[in-house]
Image (cartoon, rainbow, N blue to C red; front, side, top):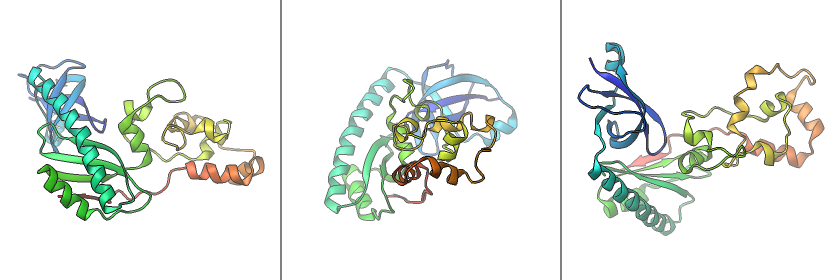
Length: 254
């Protein structure tokens, strides 16, 4: 019977379940190499291996290959340096093709078989020529992934208004839509500077206790009640901070 461990991957930060044989001994916070659908990746063990059922074993697509050794640590440092250079090179090609996109981060898989560039953009971007140039430059599989503004903060990390590390960079795996109704329901200040996060969107933590509060009773229509208290400029700004529909299909590989 195989064991199952929970591993936090490097970029983007996400926790995956991975099979781990009895011969591989890893403890909490131990670095390890994991075989995923994207190739080999570096990860940190957040929950040591424990026995799992045969059903969980069948549905687990990822596998811990080994506990990271000294050579792996050196390889990781080399990869991090190469990622910085790759980001600079990609930016040159973006400028060359005059593409309306903002590069956020680059990521090599641990085996260097895939190089992914994350970017934000206000609209769909045709970057087919860019992918061709990057494939010729780096001689590896290239993927460009359009991410949301919240994902940018998740990748980069930082300190929130509360003084702690950003929740999205530490433990949030999936984002949920956040609206200004949540702040109103909890009787919080509607000052945009107080209820918006590093990403420029409404704070994710507005949703944590939202369900514990009763529905708004003071106004028949939430938005009408909010409009009575705020001027049009504030209302417009708050609506811009709300989450918008996102086209997750804007990605390409070569």
